[in-house]
Amino acid sequence: MPERGLLIVLSGPSGVGKGTVRKAIFDSEETDFEYSVSMTTRGMREGEVEGVDYFFRTRDEFEALIDAGQMLEHAQYVGNYYGTPLEYVNQTLDTGKDVFLEIEVQGAMKVKEKVPNGVFIFLTPPDLAELKSRIVGRGTDELAVIEERMEVAKAEIEMMSHYDYAVVNDQVELAVERIKHIIKSEHLRVDRVIHRYNKMIKEL
Amino acid sequence: MPERGLLIVLSGPSGVGKGTVRKAIFDSEETDFEYSVSMTTRGMREGEVEGVDYFFRTRDEFEALIDAGQMLEHAQYVGNYYGTPLEYVNQTLDTGKDVFLEIEVQGAMKVKEKVPNGVFIFLTPPDLAELKSRIVGRGTDELAVIEERMEVAKAEIEMMSHYDYAVVNDQVELAVERIKHIIKSEHLRVDRVIHRYNKMIKEL
Image 1 (cartoon, rainbow over the protein chains, first blue to last red):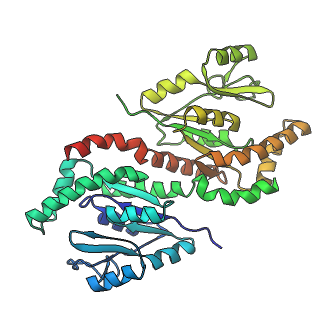
Image 2: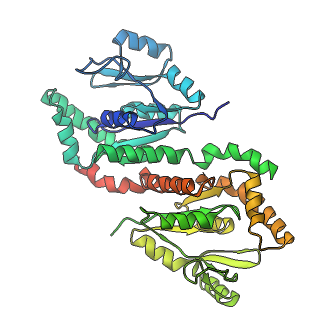
Image 3: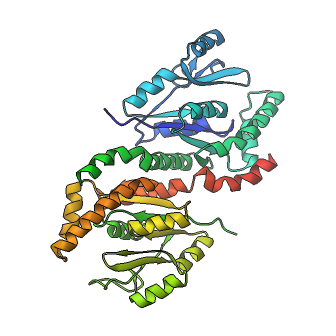
């Protein structure tokens, strides 16, 4: 039976660039983990692909899955559901592969309740001005929506203390490198590997 | 005032190759930490240099420093004292530099009592046969000394559970790379960096 994989959770305030960093990680070499595609009820944006960026579902379909206990976490954000299908995650961890989740802060905290030994990484903006410009810069939303996002972002940054690691997203390539270091390092934690050594100790 | 550096402690059973790995780390690029030279009462071996490999002292000199509270840790091992001068370590951490200690297992546990937020890395042999051959293979000691070392090594491997990370020394270059990942990753731990974000949160 293979050693169970690590559940790696990348989150952070809205507009910090989680999606960009996640894509860069999966486009880079040396990644031997699986990306867990999230499910959402929000509309598909231009260029997005069903089953790649998200599984796009109606509210009725999403709520039926919640009721069936089939979501590892789910949250409402700016009027839409976002969530992680449970079955896919568990099956992948059991095969020994790491699973990588990129999710909103609300959802990450729910995952932490269910999987406390996951690796929780908080992506942070280099500074406030940068965060503001990223939230506003998307340019597809009304002012009220932008202001709501800023309030949400404040509350989200305050959630950092519940995470294991903080990674500054000053440059995408640097953020990706830091996240890779964290994942490699977490695989070396004594509490994750000590069972491998039990046999060695007995034989000595 | 700079952020305080990390105290990084590399330890592991005798004969596992701690000294070789430590030297390879300091010979490699990208190392911006200080090596804390240990003090010992054992005889200088061929090729060793005072103040580089160890500070070599008499038992009387060493015990005087212990009594003066000037050792971060000290231990007796196969009849000799080994220890870490306290003042050097504290001064270096205060300047914001990381300090790297390569010490015996007994000493590492004493450091952990005094500096619980240090990073404790346990270097492990790939397997028992390899460990035995390393202990015997030094070829400079009598059988009784070798057997004593094996007993010490067993007790030391059982100490692994008190460490943060376990790094297999299968190849020196790989062990060095793993240790570098750990150090980079530890600098990103939320509990080490959260104070940097307090100001940002207040300004939001």
